[in-house]
Amino acid sequence: MIKRIAIVLATGILVLVVFLMTLWAVTAIYYSNLPTPFLRVFGGVLFPLIAIFIFWRIRPIRKGLLGFGVLWFVVLLWWLWIPPSNQRNWQPDVAVLPSATINGNQITVHNIRNCDYRSTTDFTVAHYDKTFDLSKLEGADLFLCYWGPTAIAHTIMSFCFEGDQILAISIETRKEVGEDYSAVKGFFKQYELIYVVGDERDLVRLRTNFRGEDVYLYRLNAKPELVRSVLLDYLDTINGLTQKPEWYNALTLNCTTAIRGHTQPYAHGHLSWKMIVNGYLDTLLYERKTIDTRLPFEQVKSLSKIHDKAKNAGNSPDFSTRVREGVPNLRQPAGN
Picture 1 (tube, helix red, strand yellow):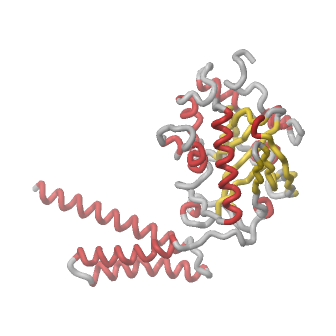
Picture 2: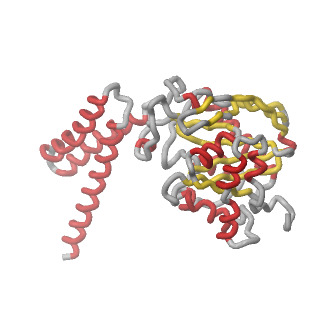
Picture 3: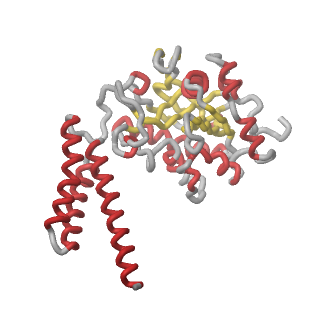
């Protein structure tokens, strides 16, 4: 009896694994670089038909499983071989890649984006270059932008220099003209990765004032030397993407997991599920005392919401200063 139950369970697990492998292969083929929609649909239908034929005709079953494994592995190798590119018909707001020139403490960041928005679809793209002094780097801030389900957020990292000089970096999908974001497509090499280096009047105001997202600003408790290392790591990746593009992946290389990649060599901490379900990332920061913990978390979260302040600041040159007013900050003496 126990043996029969074990056989049934093993068979069920095996069937589930084969189903999931087939589902992945079909989706990967459908969201692929095949030249026409017909070929993508045809390939997506052909794979399960071949799989069924293999299991129907090949005996014993272990040989059928081996044949299916070979078929699936061929699709995997082909999918892994699909190269990213910097040469596509990009949407205007992501058409220009940023870069940086580093000379000692002086970093000159090229192509900092500062779009003039009239709506989410009507805007004038503009860029500028700016030089920052690393010796005047004070710290870093993190924005959590909730655009839908509260379990998921978009993250933006800002690096703060003396004199209210801010450099914001948003890790995003680089979309082509006519292309929209899809969570499913995000797993299947549909979008190249881009680090948008921008003015907060662009990156943050777009989300608060035009998209109507709930945006929270958390001022991080990190030593300037650590923040310096993280920023330089960011800039190294940004320069690398100009020569060697990479694929965005909704699970393994997104706006939050990429940040962990930049910070992990310098700020050690175990991987948490809250880095994947990143809408809860602020609770993790609170638990690790990376943000102000002098108040209860819910009060810190309430004070960190900047939607109204951003609305009132509009396109003011002191936008970054105004959205930070009243936000809990361990980098300031208690009581400030």
